[in-house]
Image 1 (cartoon, helix red, strand yellow):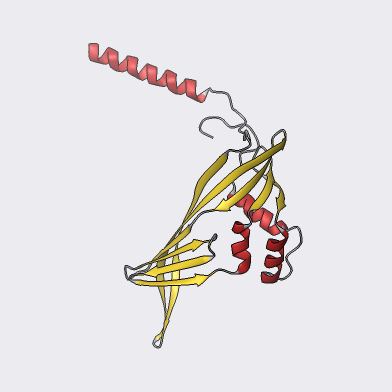
Image 2 (cartoon, rainbow, N blue to C red):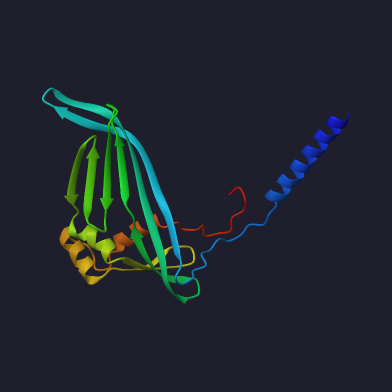
Length: 199
């Protein structure tokens, strides 16, 4: 009798607490920008697909798994207006790992600050140089103006970076609008409307 009573009491308590959590009012999430602070996160991507191996005997498709890890850093430089922040975006060491059907792992480390790409396969190591435009983006920093949701309102590229990108990619507009959309995809943008637990 006592066990049944305790079990019933426990179930009622769980039901009450769950109902309380679900009935919480929705809130609107916004960034509270503070000059001198930093926001850091790591973007991780996993993909499965197939690659083509070409030999004298012909071309063979092989399954491949790819993992990408990209650290990002957002430094708040100043807050010129309510809900608006001028920030600097930079990237850390980008690591790509490709698993092959033979059990090998091809690891590529892209260091934008030094402009070098290091590829490792077993004991073999190969180092190559990045294009000028890719190096300049991080060395000179990408400055943006974000709103309280994290959306890109303005993108500022140093003149030397824009010139390098224009040489590398013909037809790039002076405002670099396409790059602004790309950067907006990287940043964690908050929902426009209120959200409640479970949304």
